[in-house]
Length: 429
Ligand code: AMP
Ligand code: GLY
Image (tube, rainbow, N blue to C red; front, top):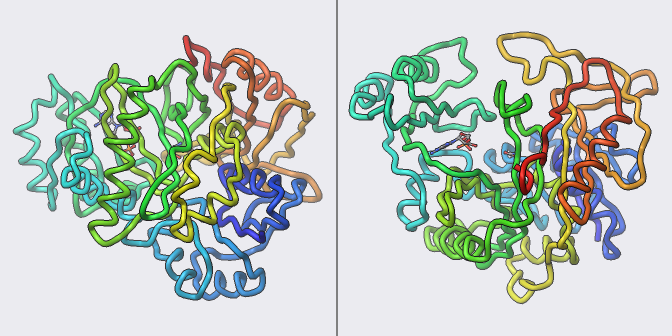
């Protein structure tokens, strides 16, 4: 099979590296990919993936049997169905189905219509109405979650117990031209209690296969301090979710999504990422994403056993039924640690420390996935916030973590930052 992976980050590196390792796959092109992927028998194809003409030209040159989309934005923009209309086989949601991630309000209303457990919410279409609406929320006692409706790269959600901060958030989201989030609609949500878990399923529009579970560390610094990031590390918990929780996730979350989206006329095809809050055995959905997580993909893919390229191809064609038991997770644990550039996540206009050569002594039991890197004067340098990540697997979380930190110590670039507490608690957290 000749496969294209669309995207350029660590998640796409993990997808591409996995796919090229399978016997049925001859070629994987990453479009556009990054310079850190060059050593892995992968082909990089320069392309502006926002430009339909450029994307189509490149696909006509590559002639892939299957196109796998990594990130959400091109799917929200309709690039998946555009390629499908041109005759390509695509794993990725249509623009209508991508609203599950692209519009938080669509997503919440879908959950309510389909009886998927989630926090109670209210929506507001203007600053004035939202400000007035705040008065009926007991912010100081019970807290409130304020979400901008649109995709906002992790910046459009504020959880607070402070009325003044809630009011300021509304001003920022609706009125403040200097705020990176700019919305016409917000959603207020009750604060959920529990432990966060990312759960993944492969869907073909009719049925699904559960791919696995992982815990992501969103804050920049140890002990969950500092600003929100795209994810600074990740691990697969071993003693939970329990079987009961897993079956709730399948039956109360994944199945109603696949059935509800089909019933409502936009079947979901691709990877569904359910961001969950687990409180004892109680499962609630925080959000849906229409793609693999980053760094959850780098953490989970090394544990996934079976013919993933075949599963992706079947899902893209709507023929996944019958393949359910052919993808399984190994019993090992997996730990992933991200190295970022100094200054990441670059808030308040502060620059990041970029363009520094990266030195790596590769250890045998570790896998390195590259994200914000480029080649400069024949050397790999850091060119973005999250630069690379290291994944190690092992019999126990502790063994996987120790190996990952051993590898981290053999990587260096000026300004490099990483958390030292990934997967270090009891059962990881
Ligand atoms: P989202 O972009 O919807 O995933 O929200 C970003 C983060 O905000 C989540 O990972 C949670 O940590 C937090 N969050 C969002 N919604 C809630 C909620 N209803 N209760 C508690 N925390 C939430
Ligand atoms: N790691 C969270 C995400 O991919 O959105």
